[in-house]
Length: 137
Image (tube, rainbow, N blue to C red; front, side, top):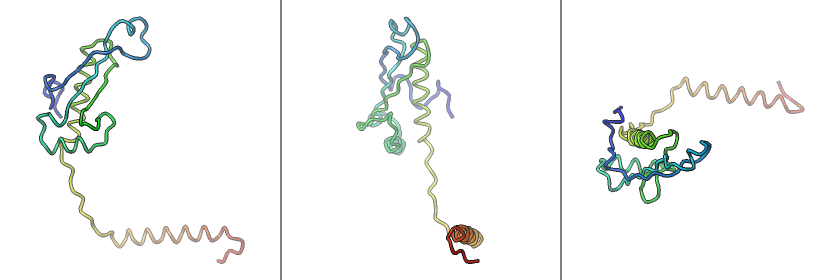
């Protein structure tokens, strides 16, 4: 996997805005805009078409219906670290769709697996039949 500096997406391909962070943090949280909203338009990007389609098909809640990835980073105290963290998370998201999944070919179950399945079913049937009032042995 590529490092943050050599990631799939650079800072020039995203739009980001600084916002105030939520949660605890005292007065620092109330006066500094250290959290970062990162926006990345998948359809307008230079990513390969197959990656774009897999990214849009992910169903991730960070991807809007218009195809824009929105990532909010606020775990660090400085804007620079939050920007770097957001960009790293975006690159990890893109890296997850970079590898094409292998197509599964259906195969028949083995005879042993069928026998084990049927034995388990008959064992469970015997257990349940013992629960009835007139259990037959």
